Image 1 (cartoon, rainbow, N blue to C red):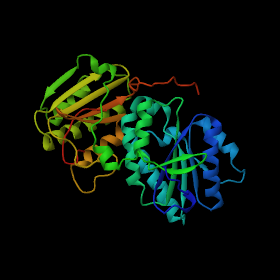
Image 2 (cartoon, helix red, strand yellow; image 1 turned 90 degrees about the vertical axis):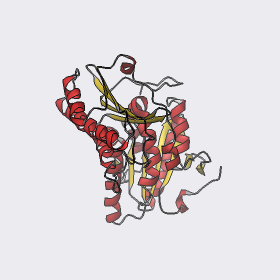
Image 3 (cartoon, rainbow, N blue to C red; image 1 turned 45 degrees about the vertical axis):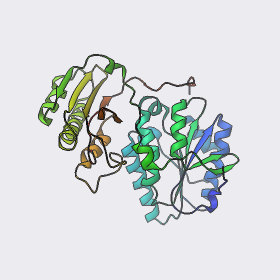
Amino acid sequence: MNSRDPETAERGYDHAAVHYTSDEELLAVAVPFLTAGIAAGEPTVVSLEPERAELVRDALPSSADTQFLTIDDVYVRPASAIKSYRDLMAGLVADGATGIRIFGEIPPAAIDTSWDWWARYEAAVNHAYDEFPLRSMCAYDTRTTPRQVLDDVARTHPYLATPGGHHTNPGYVDPPAFLAAPRPMTPFPIERTAPLVDLTNPQPPAARRAVTDFNKTDLPAADIDDLVLAVSEIVDNALRHGRPPVRFRIWADADHMVVTVHDTGTGLSDPFAGLLPANRHIGGRGLWITHQICSQVTLHRDDTGFTVRLTAGHPAPTTTSTTTRAPHSCRATSADTRG
């Protein structure tokens, strides 16, 4: 690996992964990175789990004007995280910032239950943030992070940061190529049961009614209303842009509702669909909406076609970890820019 000095990096997005095995190793990377930004007069931002945020706060100079974000507010959904960070950075640049530093992590709960769309986030931000003078580091605890997640991290970060330096990552994959590659869609446990609804080529009104008629959840009404809107958008997209037949299925219990929409088309042409606003294609609007309002959205392409899985509520974890954690949604639509 080639060493690279982040202090002399070209402007643009410098996106590095940090793999750590102890609090000391985390601080050995985070503190020099942030204090160098403070010394240079750059805005510095930290978004970590509370206990790790406190470790970093205590290690920084008492005079440091570092902004600490609440991690669970930032990382609710990938699309909203991108929008929030872009708004934050645009404001900082408007105020005169010529460099910005962010040290953060994706919440472990999100890694456990919805890593697929956070993997897409880690790839997409290389494009979404490149207009800003940003250097960020994404921390992953190798003691508790599943192997398949670390494999994706290796493919979505152009750089690796260690206590010994900042290095080019030879395993990095260009975002469009990473986002276009087929990814497995692990079924939720509920999907291994018979669906409550299984329709072929339903019109959006019929799909909307099915969600409300077969709602067996205890979720807030607003969550189901959001799912109804998302279902309407995705079914319409599949009928307009996909290849028939379109198959629509629903599973539900007290905690969550899962909807899949599948067609036999080839899927999205825009690798960033859903994560970034679709400015060029009307069809991309629906997928952007679903990424803003669903608890989870999964996109899947295989030899049978293209699937979107939409989820309201929070299913049990599907990630299989090769380690033990220390204490501390929908198959459907194919189309031009599915949305």
